[in-house]
Length: 255
Image 1 (cartoon, one colour):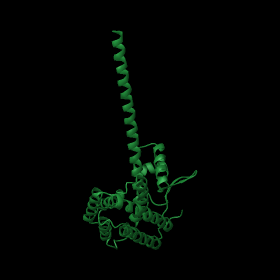
Image 2 (cartoon, rainbow, N blue to C red):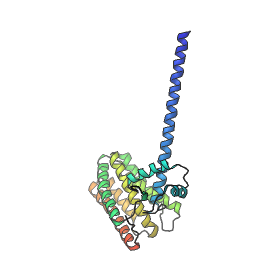
Image 3 (cartoon, rainbow, N blue to C red):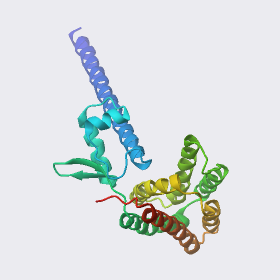
Image 4 (cartoon, helix red, strand yellow):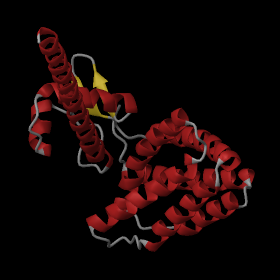
């Protein structure tokens, strides 16, 4: 009888340990989810210009502006993560600031994009299977169907933005190089902030859908040299247009 009691007690202890472990994992998952959501919210606020380039990010004012019901600690952590991504400037003893915009910064981002995305696309063309290629074609078709115009409402513009981002990242996925893809993802976010600013004040001046289609056609033919050259031209054209706009509108902010 004593032995049976010991067995039952051991089983109960084991079950209790398991439940406690699951509870801890659930808490960790919840904390991770909240932190990720906070970083996404802040990143989007910076990319859309809701938080202006060069602006000071005072924690209490930031919580009020974005309607955040959190303490300062997770907010500092989120801003530090965005600092590592190049979207927030962390100033010693002076707090946080949105990274300013400048022609030099944009040119650097563009050069890095050309080198990194060309490498990723070349690897993807060499390694990517038919499923990857089908996904690229589907992403390009979905983007083409969205009529992005200068008079589009904000919600519709955001649908186009998401589809545009999905196409560019889908194009590179076949490289099967997670570190490179993460780097390309970060560079795309940095570039996206400039492109959104440009499109907010300037009409479409090129056949962007045609440029996307040409890149996809070369990719389907497994012509890496042509596909990478077209992608580089696509990035460089956008960069040149934005640089002209920065100079013309004096949008550069002091570093």
